[in-house]
Image 1 (tube, rainbow, N blue to C red):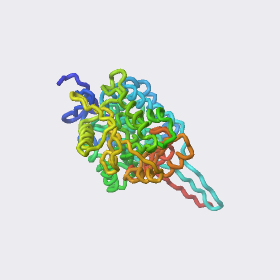
Image 2: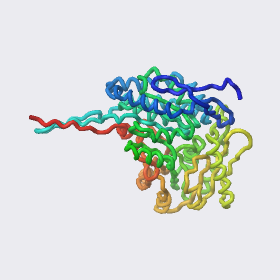
Image 3: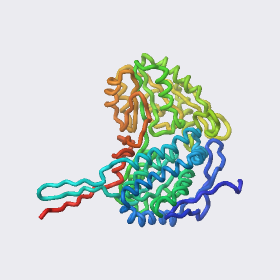
Image 4: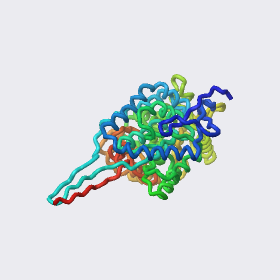
Length: 474
């Protein structure tokens, strides 16, 4: 193993800190090669990060809102000035195509710009003959931002930015699979914020449980699986910390019979297979009206077969690898289970030998509702196509899920599609599109897909708590 592999440090209390023990190898999922090494934070380093954030909060909370706006915008500017470097680093650790990595990094700039200009109710005054009330939205304290591996930059900043703008301090824990871009972000911004306001730590599987059980944290902002989200919520309950949990999904698309087949097949493919299906809000079940099922299936398979799967650094690649070996094995086993169960394939994607965790797009032909590929979240490039004839029936089938994150309805009749969308039990339902998310656009999972919301004024205020100053007049 080469000695010139890049090593990253953590940001704790304004200082770049190296590990105190063995370093963690970070692999490129396209090559299975070590691209960098990062510290595995010790208990002392974790405590130092949380304590530094706690000390910094005592002064940061009083920094004028205009100055906090300026600093949040400055973080976005630092990202923009280094966008090419950060995008390449993101592709090397996450695997997505370089163009997609660049879009993810650029989204930080859009979020920072929106946050720096958005208006939210920091304080309101109400008055009558006897009392004057000041209703303030005050910061909570130290926020632990726990970030997944599928969008490690975008989803981190969607926690960091709102937390800082509202006067909180943060301890960021990226996934052990994808810590590099956030550690580099920490290097770039450490002189832009007071010491302790932003801390970024890295570590293996044990760091998450150690962080969630650490005293001194007032809010956990977590994106990840429902199973892990329940553990975060349990730990938060022990210390009565707030939580925002964006969890798993099994989003359904309903394709009505009046659609333009070619354009909708292209759009549905993107909604299913973007980031190789590793998107919380990805379409994971596609219900197609029986009148157009065969024609739509032919077009969707044609689009999927054209997709170029490979190393995200290679020109022309549209889909990268599954991000890590654990998820790769789960996807391969799911495909094998479908085969053993005798399910029909419209397209059975190649799982090539050799380095890298590559799985080509795979589409199932009308499997039963109780098949795992339908009832469970795949989180990979495997999607079932399902027939329906009656709208009431398909709505019931879509809603018969523990999840309620997102969904979509596709139709030339916008009013009819909107009426169907209103019946879907999920936090976001798109009509004739999917996965469109903006800084001003709140995302809130229903049922087992989460608690609270991210983005928008609604998500921003979840980093605050109301305080009333009640003054009785003489």
